[in-house]
View: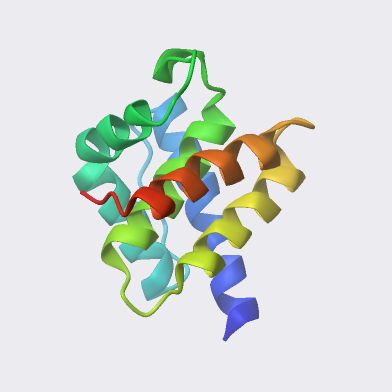
Length: 124
């Protein structure tokens, strides 16, 4: 289950990244979990972005790389709306994808933002 969810998250990341770059693409969902993440992030994007902005210190949403922003959106969607996914798993999966697709600081940055949201108990 973990491996298939990991793949589903990676596919969701790629789709959401492409949608941000080119809004005209039609997502091709590989699993129901991928579809829930993609549709959920799209549906709640404004609320998710406002939550991210609350926890940015000396940053703005516009300054964050698209990779980091997409991973934060996905993890926050999971934390707030996917009850069967433990917070630590959502954070760890986002950090793992950040190591793969982001720069050398992405994992630490994403971990910090998400950990602060969890510590404060903030949700959408």
